[in-house]
Image 1 (cartoon, one colour):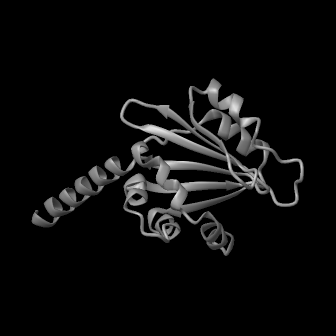
Image 2 (cartoon, one colour):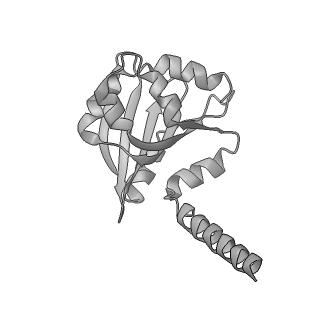
Image 3 (cartoon, one colour):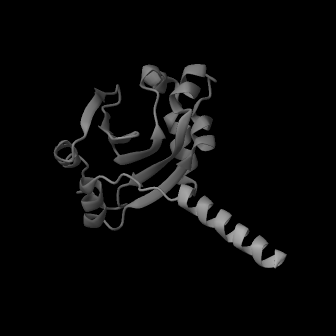
Length: 167
């Protein structure tokens, strides 16, 4: 009898843990259509520990910015497709209810935009990097936007080199 009670308790605990781990992920319909349109896109997952490697100056504001980010999903355009563009996503993002928070052009002519869609309990962030190699970043977690300027200290070059190396 005691063994059956222990098993039932174990099964209930496992079930409860599974329920708390299962949560509906916010998915942009525009991003889903884009991913369907370009099935050769590479998808890479970057966890917070790897993102921290980009903070080579050990800026505490950068740490505060990413404190509640669990991971970033990187979508890299199909290699060898010179026609690939992410510009079309901007219109669709607005249609999906996303608001553009930042849109800047860097010194090396990259266009970077950060989009947010506020939800009931949390916000969903997507960044678009229109560069030589276009990149879409879907952020799983929350950004502390008062530290957004700390993104300037990140060494994106070395982070991208790490990612291309096979994460």
